[in-house]
Image (cartoon, rainbow over all chains, first blue to last red; front, side, top):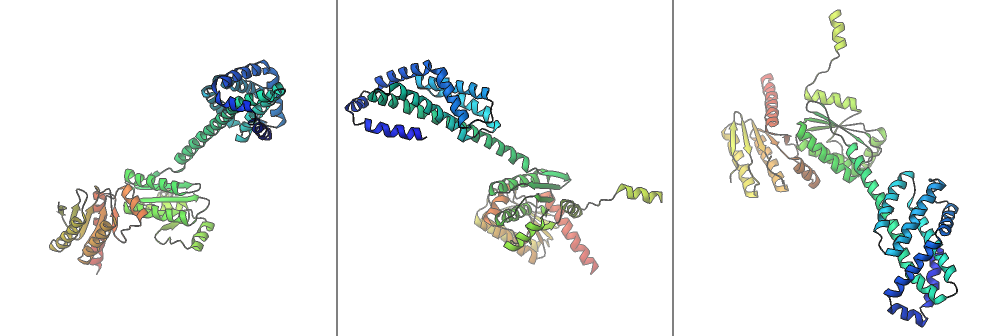
Length: 313
Length: 126
């Protein structure tokens, strides 16, 4: 990063040269020419520059999750893609490669910082090599950098964006999975549903839970619903309100709701923040809730063992 | 269009067929109030299955119907509130208060049977 800042500063005085002004006017041709020259230079010194880069990656302790050989292999691929982008100006192949690479390395715990770091390192290594080559001719160096910098920035940008996009895709996928797994509406008896809630409830999830429950009530023709919140770590005023809303909505569809599994901490919090839960039926644990629900539905449970003994006696 | 009110034994069933204007709602209220007395009804069921919106006026009118019917000796049950409607109602803070609800007409009739039987027993005990 520091190297980049220095380059920028060094370039600005160059604008004062009359040659620089002319250069700005004659845009296309010289840039393309310079890039070709640049690419040839990078191809020529491929082995050496690649090694230098791999050394700096190890030095900076990036990609510690990968073996040296793997780092070298990926480094070669990135290097070749990098040069290809400089040559053709099209980032599509690089984009595809970056997505593929991200897919492979994200599960191994490689972080955004590292990926961005190694791309910037390569940029720096190549820039230094250009400095070395053209240090005799400042005007030429200037033009070379003018051609190199935008392309290099675009590459760094492409790789970072691809990586982050892949990461976001994975996060979205996982969120979806959690959401679907976390709110089952289960029928345990005719007309009796249970809804165990596990994990934090946020407004979006609360809404989803309610909708799912209401659909479940209609589909199963439920008369009683037991909502078990043993797995909910904390309840605040918002969550309590969501619960009240869920209970009210279920009641509008003709179902009675029993809430179970309020831990002592949660009960204390609710009393402290003064949420009105008088409209809710609450029972200590899930077992008690189901028993209460069975009573409401007119079920009577008795152990067959007891009857057996009674017959024998 | 007037909401048809069907007499079914001791009960009256108001079966709403389409979205109702405020005027039609008031008309339903008045019709039910009159017929509860005329037929010596023990229970009223209002079927709102087809309604996909329930505004505050509708909710207030339904509550009024239930209160009027109770004063004239009949229980009222609202049946067929759709999941989306129920959710929207609680979001808007609209509640039916003490009015009873049931999933659909069948459930509503069963509930009314239950309620009137209890009342009957109480009457017999006296």
